[in-house]
Image 1: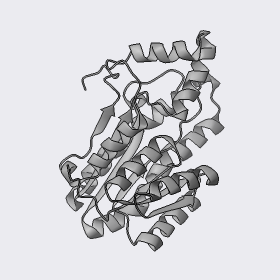
Image 2: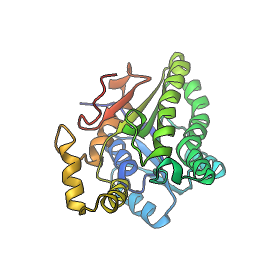
Image 3: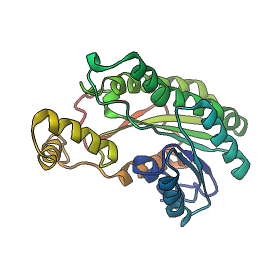
Length: 261
């Protein structure tokens, strides 16, 4: 299927590894020029080199919790490519803790890194998308937006809010031919999943192998997902083929979320 993404420009946050990198690669393979960011310069450069094998790629060291650094990344992307057609927001997860274990400082840091970076990046790209009457904004969030997890208190709270923001922006930007969607990712084999496993094996007194085996039995497809499977959904949502999909928080979780609504 031709996704008609040749020469589009995509900004993909936190793309040195995991889901962000998979999304950037999927878009690059479809002909998108790609701008990526991450905090670690070494891993970011490795990702840039891999993606650049397919298309012109810019990499900018950026802390997504910093408004100043996000603005610098956006400005450098515009300087290099002239525009931004597609924004993929993505962040690492807040601390793995239950409510009574969390401090005010951790809540504030979670808001900065999980919510405000999405607000700021969207604010940067929306005016130019409106001027061209074309744009795609895609938020990578988590199944906890719909099915909260006890030890992911901050994430469960803020990602539900991101679903609300997704719908609100879709309503406001639809007349400008800009679609806004979120992806509620399930258990995907990334560093975040291994960090969660570490916390749970200690809590439950089991091995990592036992944890992942148990996790797979809870998923109707009986396996954890691969980052590539998220990237390919993002590429579709960014394409002309998905031009009538907006305001959706799409579950990509192997059927893990049991709710029908």
